[in-house]
Amino acid sequence: MSSSKGWSPERRQRQREAIRQWRPWEQSTGPRTPEGKAKAAANSTKHGLFDAEHRALLRWAIEALREQRQALDEL
Image (cartoon, rainbow, N blue to C red; front, side):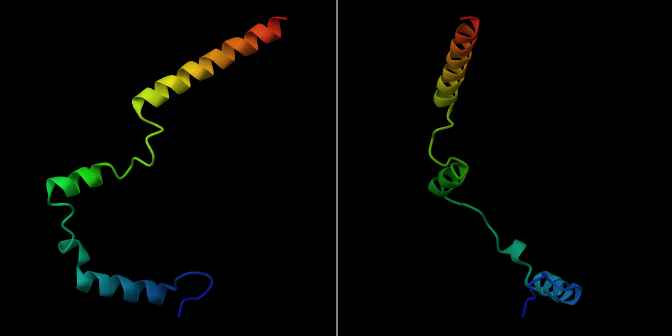
């Protein structure tokens, strides 16, 4: 059982030893097919709103708003 305060040093040590016996890193292969590699390469893309075109548009909008604010401040 885990306590509400996290892992005890004893539990952490038991888990460490178990993982060293399991050696899961030896079974981890990652993507092998071109399709799998393409899918893995896209893992950090959440929805496309931060691609280069959208970032450029966002920079343009921020600059336009900044200029508008400066024009209003001069009134």
